[in-house]
Length: 176
Image (cartoon, rainbow, N blue to C red):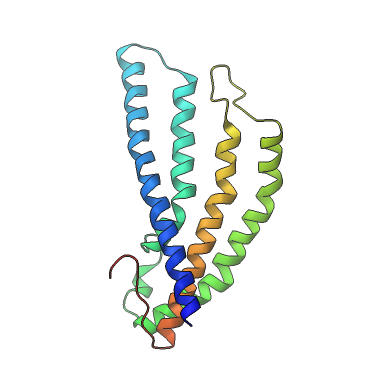
């Protein structure tokens, strides 16, 4: 059981650090969008690079931040049914959800995205548009990486749920 605690703690710490790094990308996307709006409306011009950078950063934030969001229990759920349940009932729902949906879904995306990402890296894929970002393969690599982080956080959630079901305490890296 101690090994499961260490694994869960390691996963939580990993996603905590990744999430903090991704937070800086959110500040960057605000700056990029601001620059794009100023260029468009003040100078009546726009750059393909800036527009692509917006959606590259947006994709990066959502893919790499998904595990961090799960760590903070920030994903959408039907709280009208979930909220009034006891901690043990919530743990059962989380454990079953992780085992039946989250883990298989993540594994499916990871397995099916490898060839997509490999082909993109093999040709060093860039934007097909003139003046676009030449490093599209980097964004595509975030697809399996983000789902690996989400998968790991799902495993941690499953471990924590198991401990709650068994009536044991588990320390959170979030301090709650």
